[in-house]
Structure formats: structure tokens, C-alpha cells
Length: 357
Figure (cartoon, rainbow, N blue to C red):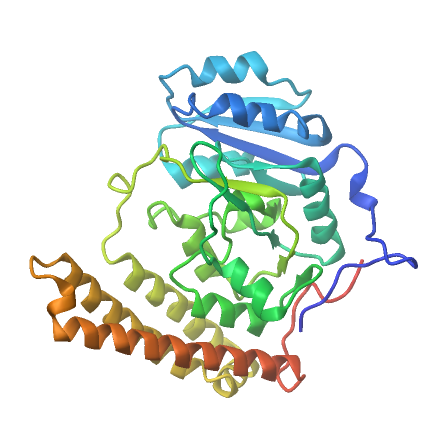
């Protein structure tokens, strides 16, 4: 079952993480980011004096990125590193250098407030989490507000009706991760906080293209405690990334992700009879069947749309579209029934984050 952070006798959140410096190390990975760096560095100034350490990892920038960083950044525990290009390889390298209890990844273009970092720190401590995720505001490359896509973090906040932070139980997190297997359960890492030891022990996979954080959630959803907060205090900018999709393309990525979460499930079920029994009651096997069929219907529809003949004139494309919608409706029903069963206490959902410290 989900749990809530400790509050004092007047209902206020425990402020123990508000002292400076916050017990977190910031990793700033860069690669030819000069166009977005001035605004990013300006936003960092609000919280940089309040964090324990800053680790800069640059990957062979040739556009003035290094000069901008050295002209602006100032911190008593600032360390600089060079690392060969490689998106999550650079992240993992930077994370290995962090000594603070918590780790924040400051990806260029995305921002967070000091209040947000304090809040994430508080939730991490009070709910004993390995990760705390939050929703960002979405902005265009020019900084204009955008309508947000529906990420897994939106699904969790809305489906559970969250009004304050909670730590998800094991089965809750698995159900949300499975249903949303094509999207990162972590959302944007620039809106999250991580326990450093967790990322150092379980680094981001490097064979998922630009969605290594998505692969990480699929691999680790049954070994971590994940906190979710409904508060919004960060931004996600829609802009070209330093690593393009073509450069980091992965063949049959969605199939790979479904196979990853299936492998996580099978491994846990084989060694944990209690989890396997709970999964049967939650109809996890049926969820896998429907997700595989949904993936097949989606691929048929995409193939029709990519053909030279207009897809709207293809009966098979319409059949695939109808079937996809039917499957989404059935999956949503399975998800809600499973979560209701967990919420009723009929399924034990252990988590390391249920007790306050």
C-alpha cells in the first residue's frame, strides 16, 4: 500500500531537509549545449549554493560549452570530468563520482526550483525511497507553455488521486510499470531525485538508445521503493537533444521493452512464491497477453500509415485501430481492478518506504 510522508502536529511537512547544504550531489552532463546553457545556468544559480556537490561531465563539446561552464559555475565542491560521447555512459560515469546521499541529474534545457529540490529531499528521507518522481511543466524550445503528454507519472498521480506524496507498494509499482512499459516510469530524470547508492549499484542501461531511464525502470521496478509527489516544480523543454534519435536508434525497441519487463516478472516470480501468487490474483498474465496484442495492433497500424496507399482506405488498418482501442479499454479495467484489490488490503504489497524514520 502507498504511504505518506511524516508531518508535524499542525499538518506541516517535516522540514529537516531545508537546512543547507542539501544532502545531494548534482550531475551536469553536457555535449555541445552552448545554445541552451545560459538560461540553464541562470536557473541553477537559485539552488547551486544549497547543494553538497556538483559534478560536471562534458563529452567533447566543441561549441563553447566548456567556456560557458567555467565562466559561470562556482561551488566549493565542484569537480570537472571529460568523458567520451555516450548518453547514459556519461550519466553513469558522473553518478559514480557522487559522494552525497542523493543524486540529481541536471540535464541541460530542463530546470527545477530550490523549493522542489528541498521537497524531493524531504520525501526521499521520510518515505525511505530509492527514487522520487514528479511531473514537470512542459515548454516549447522558445519557452512557451505546452500541453503535457500523458506520462506514467501522470497516470500514477491521477489514478491514485494523489494530493500528497506517497511511496508505492511493490505490486502497485509493478502494475503501473507494466501497463506503461513503453514509457519511462521515471518520466524526466530532471524532475526526480535518486538515492546515489541505488544508481551506483544499478546504473542506467546503455542499450536502450535515448530511453535508458525507461529500460532502468523495467529492470528495477521490483527492487526499488519509488515515491511519487503530485507537486510540480520543474520544467521539461521540447528541444533537439545532443544525441539524436538516428544516432541512438534501437531496433524493435518496444518489443525489447516488453521482453525486459517480462524477464523482470519471471525472475521475481520464480524466486518469490508470494509475489507469484499476488500476480496471479492481479491477472498479470492476462495483462501481458493484452499488451503483446496491443503492440501487434499498433505495429500493423503504423505499417499501414507508412505505406504509399492512404491508411484510411485500408480496412485492415481500421480493424487494427479498433482492436487497439478495445485492448486499451480492457487494460485500463484490469489496471483499476488490480489497484483496487491492492488498496483493499487483499494483496500484501511490501515496500521499504512504508514506515517513517
